[in-house]
Amino acid sequence: MTYPETIQFLYGLRLFGAKFGLENTFKLAELAGNPQAKLRFIHVAGTNGKGSTCAMLEGIYRATGRRIGLFTSPHLVSFRERIQVNRVLISETEVVGLTQEIQPWLKEFPAGHHPTFFEVVTVMALKFFADRECDLVIWETGLGGRLDATNIVTPLASVITNIALDHQQWLGDTPEKIAAEKAGIIKPGVPVITATEDPAALAVIAEVAQEKHAPLTTVAGLNSQRRPRNPAPPSLALAGDHQTTNAALALATVEVLQSQIPAGEPAIRAGLASVQWAGRLQLVEKPDGQQILLDGAHNAAGAAALRSTLEKDYAGSLPAIIFGALADKKWEAICSILAPIAGEVITVPVASERSAAAADLAAEFRAASPRLPAAAAGSLEDALNAFKDRRFIVVTGSLYLVGEALERLGLSPAGGGERGLNEWTAPEKFQ
Image (cartoon, rainbow, N blue to C red; front, side, top):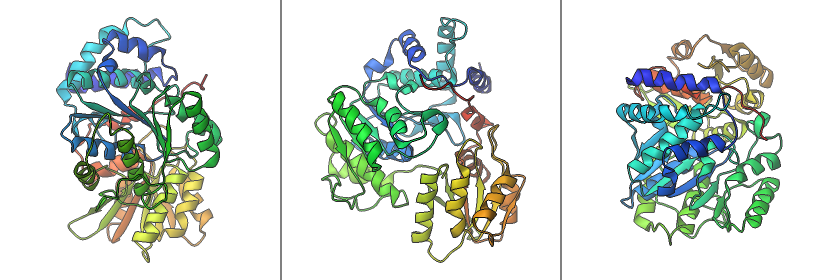
């Protein structure tokens, strides 16, 4: 198989949709020799901030000299972003080899129970990390937690970033229901660390932790009275006040695990000062001086964090916003949050089967702020051309759109259309 052929094979797995449950993943992992038994994990769930928190934890532990695996989703441009060791993406050759190795095992599943794309990729990652003899794997959930394919591991610590309304059609329509799904990653006796502030959601997490005799640590921002004992680092590479909460969460996790995976103050400082996470308040300055801020604010909580950053760090400027969203997101709320701080808006379709109509998005912006110039364009390229003379542009909404922007701005190698691998059929309801 060539790499393009491998990508096409993975595309084919999308036809099996997304199924919640662990049976397939356990069986596939067993066929692979249970690679998870050879590894140590920090399992990270939550509504927002999972990727940033994972990146911080990876940076801190890598700075100690260990070999660190990182598993995240979705990818912005290339499928290879999902599986990294010491922030080096898995190679095309390795993706091909793992896929060829796993293909015969798929024949062991009866009709109607074929492993899905995410189940296959989860086991691919486990085998890759085990083959590379990783000292620790930072392991991000896909969707939810309780029945997510990643939940076949028993980690050293379970981390829950926060709870907000997102994916309500599958995870539940209240913070308590969503918290119950996220808390499904809690294992008996395994420490739990969370930055959840919603009282009802936190109560659910605390109840599950108590039932499983899992020690619970709660944290807030670095300036909070509940901050971890480690002093704040001299600098935090990721922008936005919300990242200080993610940093506090990472620091608390490191503190809880000091006896098992020691990490000294120099590694903590170096890891946080150098961490990078594309597409999250990522500021790009073009040769002509134009600034473009890329941020995947794909739900209301993310939009609120973006707005807070713009009001604080870019006070007085009303940016030109390019916005696109998926139809199954609560995009009306996002438009309402961003409209008051926008100078003008162009909405665009997202390169996804689930894209919201650009005209509907523009109408929502105008409804939220009647004097706001808001129009729809046919593509991101058209919007960037329309705003070519603006000094400050914000590209936000779906991570699909941010990924496309990274490609168009030459900030990420072209993925050959691999962003489409993020597509998935609506999953069955949780059982």
